[in-house]
Length: 198
Image 1 (tube, rainbow, N blue to C red):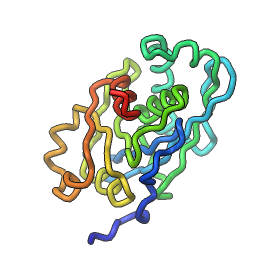
Image 2: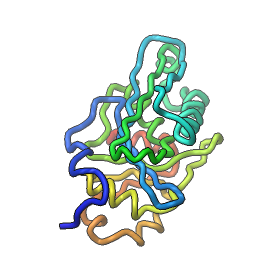
Image 3: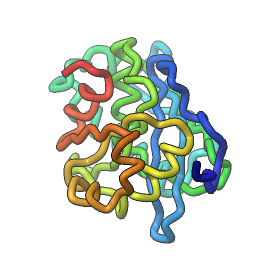
């Protein structure tokens, strides 16, 4: 049994999280992994995004970009009225306490959708991937490190950009056996697949 390099076992619960909460992971250019639980809370409001103090830098930017995408596509996503009458409060819990920022765009979209639909994501699911201002999916630099850390911490499925499908060949047999990949090509598909609604 390999010893996880960081974190302990089962930071990623095998029980479903509350609606609006998701796990997300990404890898930086040094190969370091950020693993977070992202929590979106809702209160009556006018469609504003409120980001907790601990979220900064590239992670904050990715969350703002993703929320702008939600605002621009809320009608297509079937959440137009709900978005307009809700304020969203975003918090991120750094599960590895290593302060590696996470590109959490897709996770934010899934969390908002999950919160508004009052529907939990699939259990033990870690969400990967970011998006551009136009909504184009940004692939991860690598899958091996974030999938390894996610698996070591309890992940059993991973939502992965389709762009990264070829990287899945570089992933160890152990991960392939224990973590089911779920590929997506656009944010709405990501949300539907994460919630098990496809």
